[in-house]
Length: 298
Length: 260
Image: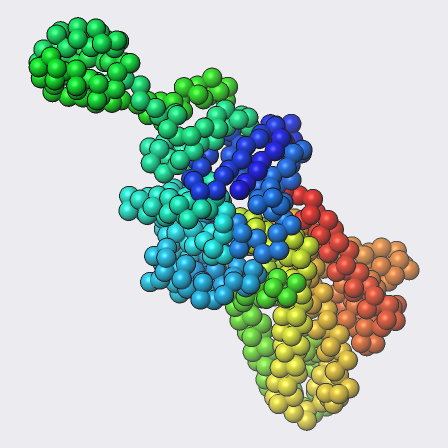
C-alpha cells in the first residue's frame, strides 16, 4: 500500500506536484500515467524519501520511507536503470545492496537468475545494453522480496521478449498480493499490464480509476449482406444504429449476444460482430488534451 | 551502522578507480626505490670530499606527498562517482539515512587511506634502507625505524586527513572537478598566497595549513615546506581534526537538506 496525501513539491518557483492525493492498493498493477513533466518521477522520488516535499506526505505500508529499517525488504524501486557505476559487475552491484539491508547472498544469485543475467553476472556493467541494465534494475528492485514495488519506465529499451517478460512478472507479483506501481509512456503496454490507473497532469490528479472503466465497450460493429433489414430489426429492438463508411453498422444499446439472437430470429446472415472499446490511448489523449497545449513544466 | 560500513566497503572495493589509485601508489613506491638507486649511483660517482654536497629529499616524506595526492583523489571519487552517474539515488534508497551513508563512507576512506599511506611510507623507507645501506647521503635519515615511526604515523594520519577532506568536498560540491579543484587550491595555492602575507602572519597562518601539520604533529617541523611550525603536536592534531570535522559537518548538513 502506497498512500500519497496532499503532496506538494516545488522546484524553485515551479510547482512539480500540486496537492496530489491517491492510494496504490495491493493485489493489482497500478499504472501511473501523465505527460512529460506531469510530476510522476518527482512523486516517486518523494515516496522513496529522495526529495523532500513542501507539504503533504507519502507513506509506504503506513510509514515514511526513511523510517523503514531495511527498506529494500519492504519496497523495491527502479527509478533510472542508467544510474549504475559501470566498473562493477551485477554480482558486486547487488551484493553491496544486499549487505546494506541484511539480505542473504543466495538471494543475490537467485534474482540474477530470475532476470536472466546469470551468464553475465561477473561481467562489467559498462558493456551492458539498456535492456540488460533494466533487467539489473529489476533484479535490484526484487532483491529484498518486497511487498511494494515502484518502477519508473521499466520497459524502456527492452526487446519484445523483455516487454512481455516484465508484463508477466508484474502481473504475477500483483497476483501474489503485492502492491505494484508502474509508470510508462507506452499506452498499449500499459493497457495490457495495468488493472488500475492513476493519471496526473501538471502535478494534479486527473483520474484514479479501474482500467476497464477507461476502456469500456463503446459500440458494436456489425456487418451483414442485408444491412438495411438488420438495421431496421436492431432499431426496432431498441438499438441505436449508425451506418459507417465501408458498409458496416455501428450499434449502441445492444450487446453482441442480443444482436446475434436478433439476427437469427430474422434469419439475417451476419458477417461480423465486433465489440469496440475506446483504446487507453484515445481516452488518455482526451483526458490530457487540455494540458498538453500549455508547455511542459517539471 | 555496521551494515552501512560493510556496504560502503564493498562499494569502494569494487570501484574501478580504487584499484587504479592503489596501483599508482604502488608505482610511487617503485619510483622512490628508483630514486634511491639513482642517488646511490650519483653519490658513488662523486669524489669522497664532495659527497656532502649531494642532498636528496627524504624519500618517505616524498612518497607520502605523492600518496596523499592519490588518496585524496580516491576520497573524492568514493563520493563524486555516485553523483556523476546518479547512483547516489540508489544509495539513498538502499540506505535512507544520509548521515549514516556519509559516516560509513568516511570510515571506509579513513581506514583505507591511513593503511595505504602507512604501507607506502614504510615500503619506501624499507626500500631506501636496502638500496642506500650504510651510505650517509644528506637528507636521508639513518635513524632506527622506532625513532622515525612517530613521523611515519603522523604522515599517514595526514594522508587520511587529505582523503577525508576530498570525500567531504565531493559530497559538498557533488562534482569531482569542483572537489579536486578546491582541494588543490587549499593544498597548493593557499600556501603560496600565505607565504606572501607579511610576517608574522605568514608563519601563523602557514602553521595551520593542512600540508604543514604532519611535521608539527611528529615534532620534526617542516624544514622543506612553505608551512610554518608554531604548533605543538597536540595543537597540530587538533587542527588536523578540524580540517576534516568542519567540511564533514557542512557535508552532513547539505546532504540532509538537499534533494538527492
